[in-house]
Length: 304
Image 1 (cartoon, rainbow, N blue to C red):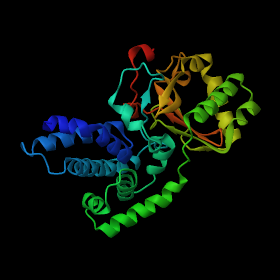
Image 2 (image 1 turned 90 degrees about the horizontal axis):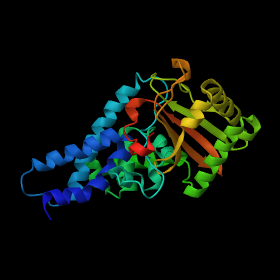
Image 3 (image 1 turned 120 degrees about the vertical axis):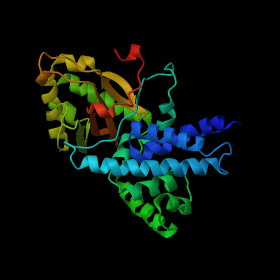
Image 4 (image 1 turned 180 degrees about the vertical axis):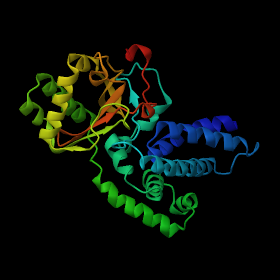
């Protein structure tokens, strides 16, 4: 195989690593592309262990991007969510390189939200070792620390990751979300509350670009009243614009936006994701920052 072929064989894995490390589609794709450029600069001879070399390069690049993201969050308006990967429902969709990225329960939005709470070294150590089975001595090389220190970072991350929701099978997830949406269509508060987990939350991410929940909303009653208030403001136009899609591999919603006549009743493109627990909706994620929608990969016929 040529060096190009060897690299392309590694690309899907590298994208999976980079997306889990950064929670950003743009940063993941940039890191993988930069790794290819650096590989090309090594000359004709490929590194002896190409996979290990590429993983190390991509991981270091992602570590730098995590530092940049931490600085952005200091002045970010409202909540911070990872970038969603949005794909059409059905098997007839044209393949996309991001399809492989969300093949795994560790790429669900709920897990990525908890990953975002880790320090950069903890995140790198956990993802590389616990998800991709990279030995701790190699993790230490990426972080510039010893093997024992790398092991400690992973241990702290592992404890934090116990807060991540248990993975929900796709049929159970779909049933819970559809039950919630059907209740929303009735406009009945009690019917909506009955579809929600007692610890349900709403998390919105817009960075001040459009309306969303600036603070996390807790509890079924507040959750239901929040969404009823939104649909009272936006009217049927909002509901009719929502299209079912796959958000990080599970049922969610997408809209290209709608024009309600003025800024208060209009909306730009946005994505809705969900976490399900015990057969009930446990979290709703409103992705409305346009800078974070680069992972929306829908064909023109599906994005109308």
